[in-house]
Image (cartoon, rainbow, N blue to C red; front, side):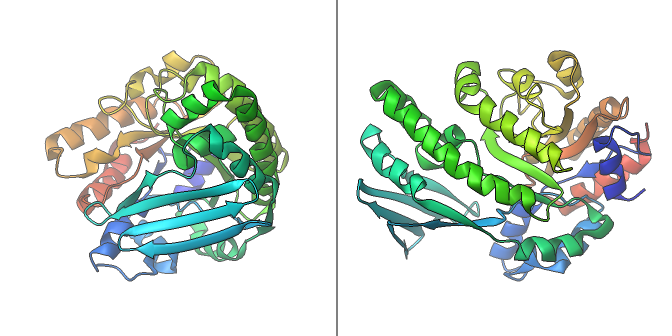
Length: 366
């Protein structure tokens, strides 16, 4: 079976010949590009899919948003200062500004100034979302879909739930907690406006060419507990898993942090699978305990190999032992996809990606 056929079999409740093996190589590729070892357009090219085929790893997560946002009645300015990327949004209710700094050593960027600093910024943030419209942006999706073939699955993003948009990107957990305490009604009203805005974008994503739709929550249980989840996240997720299923497509969400605090709840939402599940010793729950801990559910588990295990910080012997132990669990029943949690890092050893493919062939049969 091809890698695509293996994944589809599991998603459709059938048993393939072997455990599917899929890995997110986007961050690893970013490092190769940054070091001049791949061309700048590598990740968008057909060669990127050929690379996955050559490594024997399934392609799925070059996530893209199949829509573009147009902010009306707002003045949006973006510029760069050295390694910093700055965006300023001026509205009749006030101005918002964020700054992200590129870290060349790690080939990534992080926020040094969030868009929202406190409750005083909520009116401007609400105005921005109330005056945002979306247009479909399917060109890359149609091109990518034609390139995938048997190499994997075609996945695109919906917007995050409004709460996780704030926590992961626009405000940070500390500011979110303070805003909810300082102005609870305004906070809830603002999230309702953001959800209406995100719903319009999500509808375009579901109507697009991708066959798998992800809500990219970037969730971890130590930052969002059951109370916040039930109040602010479950309704959005349940709404869109139903609509994705009605469209004949598969749904998933990205949970790449600690599992114990939220994995049971997320498995009752209706997702076809939970993606990027990080096991102990990097996470807080071994693969062998996932099924028993969650209980009866139709939701599939996707992940199992921490990204750090692909770097020289982990010995060859430990890498080999760990992959074999994970496969010993996953080959017991077709409810797992072996994946990287969260990404193969820039300092990865390519030989280890190849080795996983070899181990799947050797000891990944059900």
